[in-house]
Image (cartoon, rainbow, N blue to C red; front, side, top):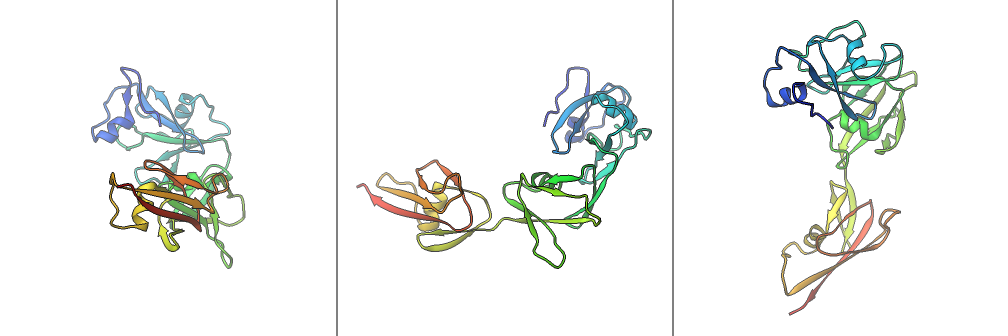
Length: 248
């Protein structure tokens, strides 16, 4: 996320992050993002801009777009073209713009959000919920059926007749290390983590080296080996063999 501005521009995101008051004179630097939560800098002259002025600062017109302010708690609040927002007192420094004429209500971790696009990716849902995209999963709740996992690049449709409900959870991945089942809550595992899963008392030593091989990995890397300093992305059911060799 870019949040630096040229000299003379009041950096509103930096002021809020530092806990200092936003100064009373402009121009003011804010951040305007898209449906993927990618933010770019924009500058407004007025400390109390209208929604139309914020859109104009982002190079957009007031017709055919929806503008939302990102609140301190992560919730979104629509800002209409004629509506004003005080940059000096509202804690507003980030905005989202959607090329749309309607919004879609979703429930995410029991909180309601209005989203300005008919689809949303798994990665965006995680960011919206304030979760790490690698260490958490997001699911679409299916009433009377099986909840559906939404991958980071998967797109969930919001255009149905009902409010879609999503929830996040820490990942749980089952791997096999030296024929013993282990469960991890992260998707990347290092050489030394695997060694200590197999041999809890293992420490780096000049006399002992550990060979680490794996199989049943993800499609792009189904099998191979690791050396000290390397890591590997894991998938459910991945198998590892860790073997010590005495070099003394």
